[in-house]
Image (tube, rainbow, N blue to C red; front, side, top):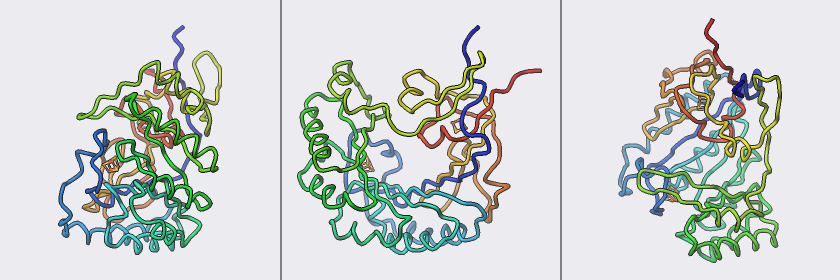
Length: 298
Ligand code: SF4
Ligand code: SF4
């Protein structure tokens, strides 16, 4: 019997997730940037700035609990960034706000962001922009709601620097995790067996675990590392309650898996629809929470 997944994720999982791509420009130009196709090279994109107000008004009318990730480009470059954080903080249905930043602003800028317990910073370390200033900022912010996402270099020339960074974070109790890069149209990643050997102590099998049930009756709780290693992230054609939505700079809100755009005023019945998975892999860890069930032909 071929082992296959009968169902996975948490039954009745309801928490809604938004990823808001606040601006489509960045002050960095990482070779491997996964959103490079969204980025524009100029700062003079005034027409998109005003769209945020309508998004906030729509979120004020929401009727279910949600988590918000703020992306870019570099989202802190939005001229109304602080106002947006404040409005989201005051939204009673907003449970958390995680800002993904390259940490290029000042320490004071980031410290001033922590106006509410809901707000956290997830700083991305980019090896092409390695600097002592980045490390100093991480240490200065480590006692706040802060963690660093290390974009792991596949090129050997950056490995010593990455190893030293990990050691510095360990010595200074900076929270971090190691992020394996995905290939993009412009950058094909090449993580060799030597890479995995070199960083095996850092690529730990930690973090949350997600329930899986298989057709031989076994039930397992698996980490993201195990899921990816065993190729258990493909739920194509499974029935799934896909509750992750993307907000673009034009203010459109659409389902990240199906691309279906939400109506102007949306309610839970619009956001919590069960779909037939159109993709061949879940693209982020949170999606492993969503409940999926294999559809068998009668
Ligand atoms: S900092 Fe992030 S958004 Fe900016 S270029 Fe690098 S990967 Fe892309
Ligand atoms: S890719 Fe989307 S629709 Fe498919 S299983 Fe993952 S979360 Fe569900």
